[in-house]
Image (tube, rainbow, N blue to C red):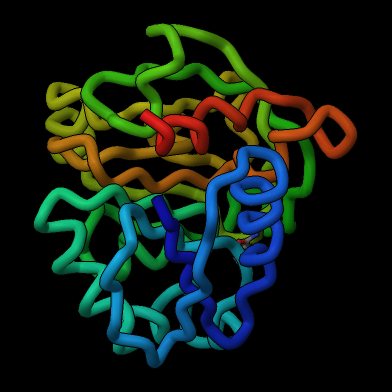
Length: 217
Ligand SMILES: NC(=O)CC[C@H](N)C(=O)O
């Protein structure tokens, strides 16, 4: 099993994800530069956090045109597991793999803190190791994490079980307290919190570990 980690100019959590996967869990990784088109041999893809293309225009707005994402889109449509963390979640919404948009935080501040969350795993293949309603804590670090979507669409997402991660103390004004969303098929997950920073007690707890461990089946 090898996991691809996409690297855009401006990504800064690609090494953290590699450390969590390889260093903590022994899962081999391959970095995918944004111009790459070869995803052969990969069993999952992670879009890491950071500031792709300097966050110009809007977080993730330029990244969505990267050649590698055309391949990631087809990979996801074939049922391949795709995880977007923070900037990766922003990219997933910009490229249309997940609905809605992530906008400036309610108070216009960059937030860097730990965040209590409630998990509702539903059909999400990344969250199968968490109980329904389980409370966990993961670090957040973002300026544009306020999830926005039309109220009717949010209702649809709730009905489909796509709202898989919710803030307990909403830090950024996200509609519906949404912290993470899955597609209905459950293979694509986007979340603002950083599970890769919670895979080792030394750097922020262990609550993110089971999420990445799900790759080991
Ligand atoms: N940690 C991150 O991925 C940050 C995402 C994005 N650059 C923001 O500030 O919202």
